[in-house]
Image (cartoon, rainbow, N blue to C red; front, side, top):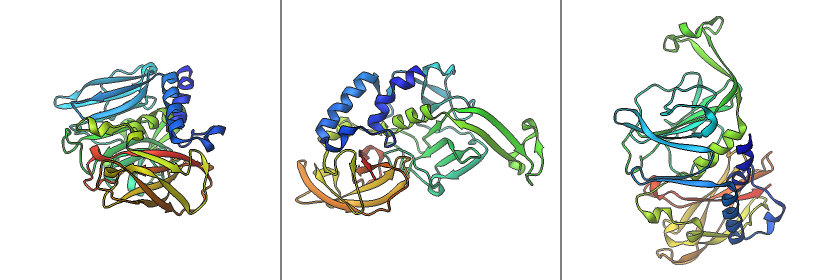
Length: 341
């Protein structure tokens, strides 16, 4: 548990749910960025960048990064807690107690896990990622209590250095895990060794997702970005600056939005904005519009507004997204502004 406490400060700077602080309501973006830099240093956040696969992310120092192969011509990058006692490479079918991310640039030709599942498109939850995915083919795996324990993330367009079926698999560790198999009428329990989902048997998973590890994994996912050159990795403060609402500001609908961004943040003078609650569920969508000539590399003022219904949660985030007409993940960037309802 020591290492999760050490990561708490980092989580507070990157998670809608954990973002807080009494001074936040009057804090400028510049002040907040400096605060986040200090928190990252205190928490010993490390960066991993692979030019081979064009991917970069931040992770706490108690997570280990492994590069290897799941099978010939199936490279993988694993991220997992160092004290998990696991033996990489880690693919899709690993023990339920383990928490890890598997970045699989060439894909991996195996069936996904059994049990309750939904497409991301049909799921009412939210996942903190900042790049375009194929929501129809991407999958969330659920315990019987509807808690997500795993995700298979497929791209609309794979990153430039990946192959067509490249994907990301995320597994969240589960305490008190239990797997049960029932016949297709769900009237009789049968041994797992005899279970045949292909014949209609039903697999059910029970347990409790480890919330500390879930928060750490979500923070890693949120930092994940793709690139072809160093320009794709420009610091966000050099791309967009939000003037209002401020960090941790109390907002009501419609919320007015203003700031400035580099001209290439927009497409046709417009860029998208989303509002999510602290569990990353979508509350509303809108746009900001450049208030001047947007075909420039200089900063351009923007304005906009967004309507939403007040959620049951107390906190959330405004997500300012770079307009990406190409759909390529290398061009996706996002800035999160925590707010209160």
